[in-house]
Image (cartoon, rainbow, N blue to C red; front, side):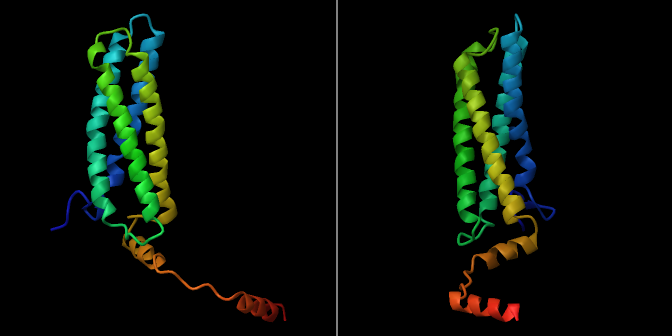
Length: 178
C-alpha cells in the first residue's frame, strides 16, 4: 500500500499542505499591525495567536509530508542540495515562529502582543516565505515530484555526462561553418 503522506491519488501531498502555514503566519502579522494601530486591539491580538497556533499545526503536517517526500529525491541529483536547503530554512522558520508563539502566551488579552513577538513573527514569516520560494524553485526549475516522468529525469540528471574535449568543439564549429 502506498504511503498517504507521500502521495494521495497519485499526487504528492506536500505541496497541498504548505499553503496554510505560508498564508496564516503572514496573516497573523497583519492582525498584529491592526492590534497596534487600533486603540484596543485585543480581538486582533487573540486572532493573531489563533492564526499562529493553527499555522503551527499546519506546519507540522507540511514538515511531515515534506520529510516523507524527501525520500523521492535521489541523493545524487542536482536538486538534492536545494532540497536540504529548503528543509533547513523551513525548520529554522518553524523554530523562530514557535518562539514568537510562546512569547505571546501571557498576553492574549492585551491590547497588542509584545513587540518582540511581533518582530519575531515578521522575521519568521520572511524566512518561511524564502523557504517557500526555494520549494517552488524545486518544483518549477527541477521538476521535483511533478510527475513520474520528471522524477525519471531527475534520476537521469544525476548521472554525469562527460564534457567533450575543447578540440572536438573547435572542429565541430569549423565543420558547421563550411
